Each structure stands twice: as structure tokens, then as C-alpha cells.
Amino acid sequence: MTTNEVEAAALAAVDEAAIGRLLLELLEVPSVTGSAAESDLQHVLAGHLERADLDVDLWSMNLPELRAHPDFPGGEAPRTEAWGLVGRTPGDGPTLILQGHVDVVPPGDPAQWVGDPFRPRVTGDVVHGRGACDMKAGVVAILAALAAIRSAEVKLRGRVSAHFVVSEEDGGLGAFGTLARGHTGDACIITEPTSGVIMTANAGALTFRIEVPGRATHGSTRYVGVSAIDAYLPIHQALARLEIRRNVDPDPLMSSYPVPYPLSVGTVQAGDWASTVPDLLVAEGRLGVRLGEDPASARADLEQCVAEACAADPWLRTHPATVTWPGGQFASGRLAAGHPLAHLVGAAHADVTGTRPAERGAPYGSDLRLYAGSGIPTLQYGPGDVRLAHSPQEQVRVSEIVTVTRALVLSTLHAVGTR
Image (cartoon, rainbow, N blue to C red):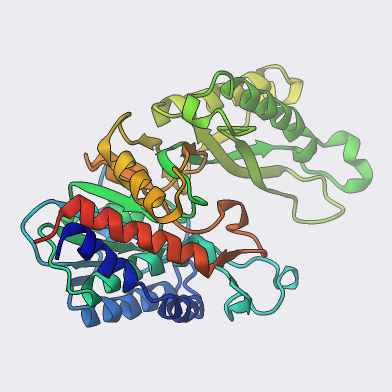
């Protein structure tokens, strides 16, 4: 067959019904990051890769060894195990990595959902459920693209390597361990939800913790104590000013966002008794890291902000707050400007849809920075709208998964070649 005939055969082999069935299967596994179900899903996916005749590497990661590595990316969810999973096609030419994470965030308040978050609900073309767009739809697109290429009996010159990873949501342990095992390639497409946009860069995100001291006393004599809640307020105001300053003149890839590098306080805990003036407040949040910024510089920026707020406050001047950096530590990452991978995926999307996709950076941390940091040109392109991720409205259109699957088929054929 000619090249055009090979491509046409592979595109015709994309099975929309199978895509829908597989998505429902994966959504029923409650693979919250760090949970036993996260490991269960890796074994389920290993079965799919084996049935597709791929060379499968499924291994239990050495957590103490990875955590002791100086470049360990951090983590937030407690875990006693982590499984790596890679499936590879045969070949001796260039290797294209298709990557997706299998873990999801907790569903939050069940009352905010329509039905059980882990019993997918279908309304027409739309599938609702935790992990629908972030990012089990992307995992399905990878499997469906490989299945179409196999079904069409296309002989690849190079190799495709499917990386399914855990722990993306809390730091990137899965990708870090996969790369440390030696699974590499010449380029990588991560199928995170991008709504048809090509994401060639990611801002970073650093988890911080601020501990603010107070002085406890009985609530009826609060005037002889110092509330840690009141003491925290000038720090919170200083953080808001820091966010404004850090978002002046963003990189052009980030300029379309109202706040390219958000600084957000996600949890605030204080006190242990209603009638006691609280003597400690703990605030945790995430600090956006600018494209190209050293995470150490970003940490120093926030630490200086808190120190200056303390120096300006009568109580905090002698009882300063402390800043630590637990949890996920996402550096920024990007694809080199003008790299052919962006053109290749963009052209594939245009061939499928008739429209050239936009190119932007993403305001959140992801595994992109780990692959890019390992010298692998990487971008993000996948089904779903990230604005619905982590929310009780999480959903994805099956038709969008089909579109991405078709673009992945073409991207793969163009990247690794055929025989």
C-alpha cells in the first residue's frame, strides 16, 4: 500500500464503540492516587497491552530508592507501592512515547455529584465521572490508536512506547520511576486534556506550608492571647500582592490566561477547641512557577514575602511564621521553540479536523517537565477540557476521544515511519 493507503486503513480501523466501552471500564476503577485501586488499574492496563501483542514491562517500583534520589519530584499521597507499566511495539527506528497517567484525585463531596463518581454516567456523547477527562480519556486514546494501527496490520519502522504512570497528581513519582528504569524515546506526546490545543510548555507548581504561631487562652479572655487566625491575615494579604507581582509580563505562551502563574491557598487549619484562642494556624497551597524559572528562586520569592510580612507585624516580628515545602514540587518545562514535534501533531490534528490547532502553555504542573528534563522533546495533546478536571462536573465527549485517537494514529505513523 502507498503511504496514503496505510494511513487511510489505520484511520478506518479506529473503533468508536470500543473507545466508549474501554472508557467506561477504566472509569469504574477508583484509581485515586496512592490507593490500592491505582495499582489495580496498572494491572488491568497491562492485560490490554499484552492482548495487543506489545512487549510489556510491569514492575513494582523501589520506593525507598526513588525517594532517596536527589531529583525525586516529591509526593503528597501516602503510599506503600507504585507500579510502573510500559508497552512497546517491535522496531529499530525512532521511538515515539505516548504517555498518560492512571491516577485521579479524590471525588470530594459526594453530594456535589449526580450519582456515584466512580459509576460512569452517559448522556448522549458525553461520559461523566471522576477521571473522565483527567485523564482516562487520554489513556483510552493511546490504547485505541495502538489498536487501530495493529488492526490495520501496519508495519512500523520505528517503535511506539506506551507509558502508563501512577502518582502524576501528587508529584510525578510514576514518570520519574519510569524514566529512571531506562524507558526513553526520541519524542513524547502526553495525552492530558487540552481541548484540541497543543501545549508545548508547562508552568510549574510548588506545594508550600506556612505555620503561623499564636498565643492560646480561654475564649472569654481572648484579649490576653493572640489568635493565630488574626496573625495569618497580613501574610495572606502579602501573598495576594506577591501573586500580582509574579504575573507581570508573562511568557507569550502564557499570556492568554487571566492569571498565568496562580498562587493559591488551598487549606487553612487552626485551633482545636471553639472556646480557645488558637495558638497555631497551618496554611497550605501551591505556588505557580514561571516558565524557565528555577524552583529554588520561586521558593525564595515566597519565603521573602512571608518574612517581610512578619517583619512588618508587631506579633509576627518576634514570633515569625515558618515556611516549608512538602508534597509535589513541579518545575516548569517546555518544548524548544520551532521543534518539529509541534508541527507534526498540529498537522495530524488539521488532517483529521480541517483546522490547525492553537499552541499555548499550560498553567499547571505535569509530567511534561520530567520528560523534557530528561532530554525528550515533549508536548501535551489530548481529549477533554481541563477546566472540568478535579470537579464534580468532570466529563468528556467520546467524539473528542475519537478525534484525538485519529490524530495520534497519524502522528505515530509520521513520527516512526512504516515499512
